[in-house]
Image (cartoon, rainbow, N blue to C red; front, top):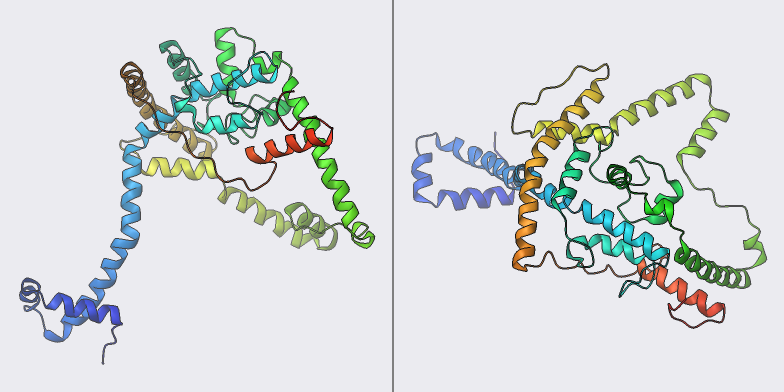
Length: 359
């Protein structure tokens, strides 16, 4: 049976057989089998270089993850200081050169290593951070879901947990040091002023939209956006009992498949560089997550000590940290720093005030 080879395979076969050493090695086999072997080898080689290179990088990342993670976690201490500084700024108790509006604190979060306005990290702060890291009830996750400086979101929720609320490291550090949390103590004077101008700008846009839009459009029925809530509402109203039971079973299965914490815990244990014991638990998922958490923290704490020594060395030698990240170009949305800035200035103008931040 005649063999078919792709152009890429034929090119590889010809190039390879032109190498004397390779041709000498191949000469021990039947001539008709050699092209088949080389074509198969070429496909395998492509998989190595395409898929294998990705896996190799991932393996290297897992080998170096402890130190890289420690370099980031060390600056959680500075994130807490920056959040406290934001509270003071919002209460108009301090002025910060270069800061015009509240949304800029989220930009500062991205450049936390290069902020010289914050006091240097101390050994006592490091020990407190390590104490938090080894408290499973307080630090199941290393990173808050929504970053470190989203004051409005966190303070309005003000729940001391990690899913979409205030990073509990903040309250933990205050409690351990006997300090009253500034976000609880200080009013958001500056934020309320900014919101007044933003609402004024939004009102201008709403009036403009209404003036430019035909009455038939303004009075049309609301858009019907597809979302899980509407799907469930529709199914509950119009499907039979069996279909709805199948829907519930499907959703429960999907929930377990999308347990990202579990998936990450399994991946952590798969790449563990030592045997990891697992405690007995009535829920095997919880047992896996806790085992991965213990392993992660066991590896992290020594790396954190090294990161702190590197940090002190850089300070003593006057060596700067990572340069500030460039701001992403504004998309004109109020959700980004530049959009927030424009809204405030537009609102100031609408209220007959100067387009500046002297308020």
